[in-house]
Length: 176
Ligand code: S3P
Image (cartoon, rainbow, N blue to C red; front, side, top):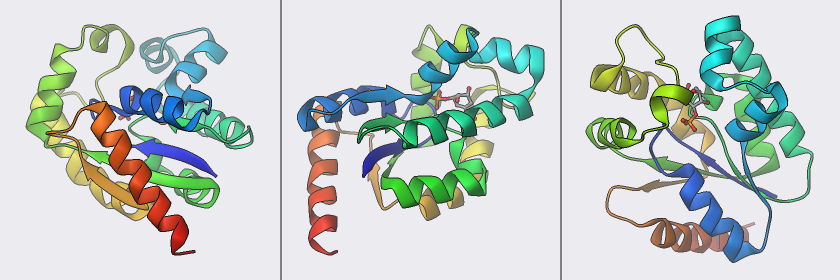
């Protein structure tokens, strides 16, 4: 069973994933980083040159590759839940955790992250807080239906999030 982290940009999937991997003594994979290394391009370049549909195909292929590797902690891109086949693969090959925060908090975090502009393309013509609000509204049903466990990240450090996630995972295993 993999431990998958899903959620919008800025929810702390990578930082929490690294802590979890250390605690579990497992490899950590950031699916976006693997995708970029495979393509030898940034995500922003892939969007600009080939378009979003091509990026989504690469995202599915990356997920499939990672799912076949030994048990790991895997941070996924924020839009991975858009495809039914990805949602199915996530749920059937691991424990899926949805990291949540309000649109305002996410926009604040995304805005502050210096790598956002060069690595992460806008997902609509608008960008900004409005984009985050619209995307969250559209995606929330998918995040919710894919996740085995959801957790609010507003007030918790990556270490505290990791501890809560491990507790939830352990108790879900006892229920099996
Ligand atoms: C995307 C989120 C990004 C990356 C790509 C598309 C999205 O990942 O996969 O820019 O559709 O929300 P992060 O959530 O890691 O930023």
